[in-house]
Length: 440
Image 1: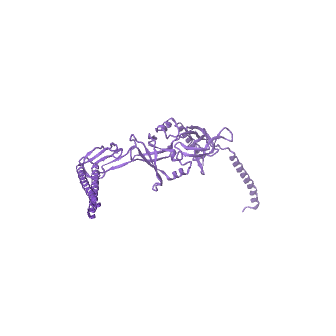
Image 2: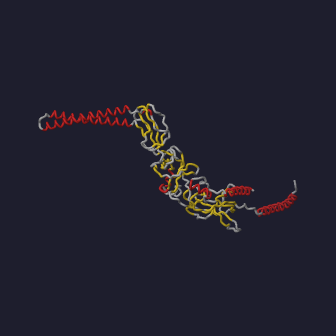
Image 3: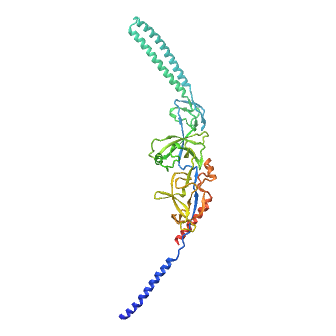
């Protein structure tokens, strides 16, 4: 065991050494903390200029083309088919003769009914004469009342016989008329399984179907939620013009290929379809060239009746947080140095169009907002973050877009110019570099 004097000696030696080591550690940590770290590079962004545009409606729905009128032609009398004046798919006019059923038995029945009517009329004429004679004698008290009553009964029976014979003649004429099967309205004829010589009757079913093709109807549905927003006047209902009276239905036959004729609403269902939670609409379209066929699926687009010009905010620029909408603009760095930082600007938007959102407040024409570079290293851009502008995206329709909007050609749905593609690539590259810098 060490003597106490030696232990005291080692304590006096170790304590100063420990104090010196702790002081060195503190000084070293302070030096390390004072070493300036390299700030992350400015985030590369692309701007777009706010402009007034005549936007394309983004409110679209799948629609089914339906004939305004459709009828199945069925025979109402029996007989052999002796005439077929219809070609499959042929365009027919109202009143055109399509089928003819043998008429001999119906002509004979009509002649027989006419003869019965003539006979009944002759009996009535005689009964009328005898009645007048009996009436005169009865008034002179030269005929008993019983004989007069018989004359009255004979006249009434003759009148009833005439009515009965007339009804049979009318029915015979109807049956004869049913041998002629005509088109009830203008339209197209379907195929038919019957040929001349076939025996047909009311039990054989449909001879052919006639559908009207000009005009036709587009049937589609809009969500009950949307219609509730429209009726309540909400600005972001998505319905351009705010009400059905201010919009017109147009048809898209393909990728931004518009049908040449605009439509008009012909029916709005009074109640919601609980199977689909939609309200049924019908819109009527002229179809003189038979471009639209019943059963065809198309896209209906609801667009303003009167062309309107509004300020459009590109969809890529709109940010939301806690129910508030805002955009980022580039402003001078308040710390000086000539750099730029992200400035958060609150905005209020209205209807959503294909090109973007209608601006109600917060921005003016000519203002520039960030549309690319809002994400870096997986995190969103923050107010005050340094930024570097590397390009601008054209928010206005290009020449191809304008042509597409006018005639429905390709390009109507392109939102950003090809010149922004390189900028987008640079933004992605910058984001990767920033992410690597953050990791380091």
